[in-house]
Amino acid sequence: MMDAAELSAYAYSYPHKSSYGPLQPPIRIADAWSGGDVSNLSLYIHIPFCEMRCGFCNLFTRSQPEEDLVERYLDTLLTQMKVVRASVPKASFAQFAVGGGTPTFLEAGQLERLFEAIETNTGQQVSRMPTSVETSPTTATIDRLAILAHFGVQRISLGVQSFSEAETRLFGRPQNPRDVHSAIETIRQAGAFDLNLDLIYGHPEQSRESWQYSLQQALQHEPEELYLYPLYIRPQTGLAKAGLAATQHRSDLYREARDLLTVSGYEQISLRCFRRPQDQKPTVYACQRDGMIGLGCGARSYTRKLHYATRFAVTQPSVHAILREWTEQTERDFEFATHGLWLSEDEQIRRYVILSLLQAEGLSRRELAAQFPDFSLESLEGLDELRNRGWLTTDDDREVLTPLGLEHSDEVGPMLYSPTVRDRLREFTALHAQGAPA
Ligand SMILES: C[S@@+](CC[C@H](N)C(=O)[O-])C[C@H]1O[C@@H](n2cnc3c(N)ncnc32)[C@H](O)[C@@H]1O
Ligand code: SF4
Image (cartoon, rainbow, N blue to C red; front, side, top):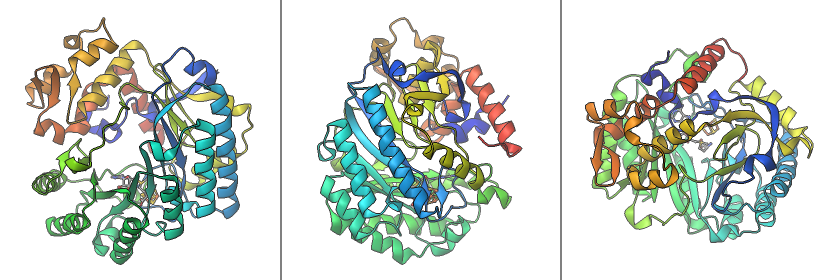
């Protein structure tokens, strides 16, 4: 059985989509959502294209796609949006997010079509709700940003990874820091966006000095938010193929960054997320409680009882095959979910507890009881161990990770996984290591 450390690379969602399997029979999307609360959903749209495949990245994305594939993808996505709208007509959203891949791989005109379709199909205005779009330094161009500003996108998240050119080569994402600085300036000029910057730490050859340098460079731009990603060497990525293994010094880099950002006025929201308090917007969406509709190939959707997604892959031939198949789907195909996982009440509770604990504000016992009145938290195996390790503390109504617990967030989740999900992840990892498509 995989232990918590091995599972930690899968910890950012529960259950991770590696534990999904074919749904037999397929489930009508309309049935999957019927009877559930659809008044406060998140809409996620996946754009699986990038200019290059970075050495660390295992996201579902295709680099350098043919132009006609991108256009066909967008057409298919808009068809899927219409079908899902008809299947869940009462869906009302509390937030929109467009991620990837690199959404701004789409040209300005394609982004415009996408945002028009979002507004038409949801009946809600982008400018009136939290909307986030991911971008990369070379695709954050003035014409694309002008479209995002026109629709009133609130947050732009830029993948920087590092401000050191030598480090970006180590990460398998060669990049000129001048392009990053100039992308940030373009974003700042194009609109009043909240800016997030993504950085990565933990490459064995990444020095403390160059990590500090990247952080300082990022801080100079006064981003509203910073996401610091611990590097995981994931199967079938460029770094894994090069035989790279993670090292312990990742923890030292984490602590230095956390301390620097805290004294620089940022509040820690989770292991990865740091935000300036004056820029925190009240949000009504709670990921542990509210559902998500994912559109596009590779996107996940979460109802309370069923999680579903398209199949996914990492290697380029498999990604390409899945994408091509997806763009050939008909309206009728989009009425069904074919790949996913049913969540028992036990899994729903585990998910609620895990996602709550991974946020610095922790788990409210009162809110948990409102969601699951018959459940007693003390019966959940794993919590005592968290307390014994000094990772969890009780604060009035809340169970909250200690600073040490927050640092070990990626191991906290797996300690609370069900045996079923552990087994499914183990099977997936064994298959994946042999190169099978996901
Ligand atoms: C969708 S990308 C961001 C936007 C854009 N594609 C780019 O890279 O510029 C999401 C983020 O996940 C992080 N990430 C992806 N794979 C990772 C890995 N194996 N280890 C750590 N962080 C990773 C990177 O920081 C990346 O910026
Ligand atoms: S890190 Fe971003 S640009 Fe690089 S392959 Fe992943 S999604 Fe694409």
